[in-house]
Amino acid sequence: MNMSPQTRTTALLTQLFLLSCMPGFVLAQDVQSDATTFERTIRSKNDVVDASVIDAGGLTRENDLLAVQRNLRLMYPKTRFGTISPTPLPGIYEVVMGRNVAFVEESGRYFIFGRMFDMEKQEDITSGAEAAQPASPAVDFASLPLQHAIKSVHGQGRRTLAVFSDPDCPYCKKLEQELVKVDDVTVYTFLMPLEQLHPDSRAKADAVWCSKDRSAAWSALMLEGTVPKKTKGCEAPHQVVLPLAEKLGVSGTPFLVASDGRTMPGAAAAARISAWLDAVKKPVAANVQGGTQ
Image 1 (tube, rainbow, N blue to C red):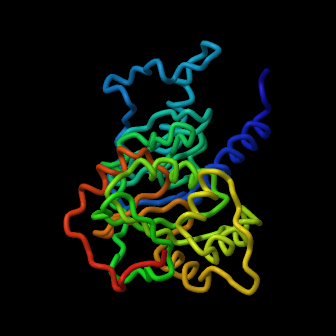
Image 2: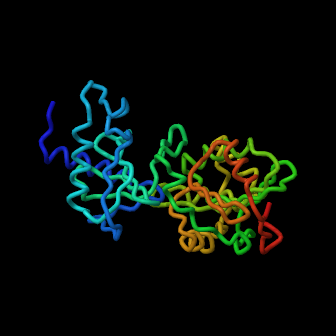
């Protein structure tokens, strides 16, 4: 069934809007660059479309891919483009420009800058993401107010990790399932309820923070779904954590910070987190004795 141009455009813009809701993605219009030349490139060096661009119905998307190339060349003649390739989202294409990665619909007008994640597999599926994206800004770990975080010690706790987490965030819960498998780490959890997405998250954060054993209450909530009883007149330190997250540019949860200031947005498997923590170059001492409980 063929869609009208207007219907097709509406569908594509809807997909772009959904992508823009993910952490780290920003919608932009009429993107310009100061690079010198346009480099026409697709995934195959010989401009041969591989099997990944064949639709399930057997129809090739080669013409659409070439249309994207043509439109980008016409709209941004001074921009040097690298790889242009299809993504798992129909009608959305990945474009590499130097150290930047963007996702664009066929017209070339609307761009999303950032990474594309397969949240079911918990994988970053952006092509060449590590090479294309600049490193995340480092966080001054020593400046983090760890007294306003929940402290949980796994094993000897010699490695250190800070996490910004929302009690009702499904991927925060996935992260907690992985963190219990990571040994020899001290985790400082900053409660960051995103009420616009999860209306009940602030109340749950307050209930956890006001529990006698915050670490146990947090684990029970995230791993078992057990919500502790709210203590009247007691709240989590939102007035500290939420401005801190905004200052650090933490717009989504979960968000991990290693002791040397490196950051990792999103959930990840235990093995990846452990290897990431082992890559710490120079751990930074906290500015306080540590968080509570």
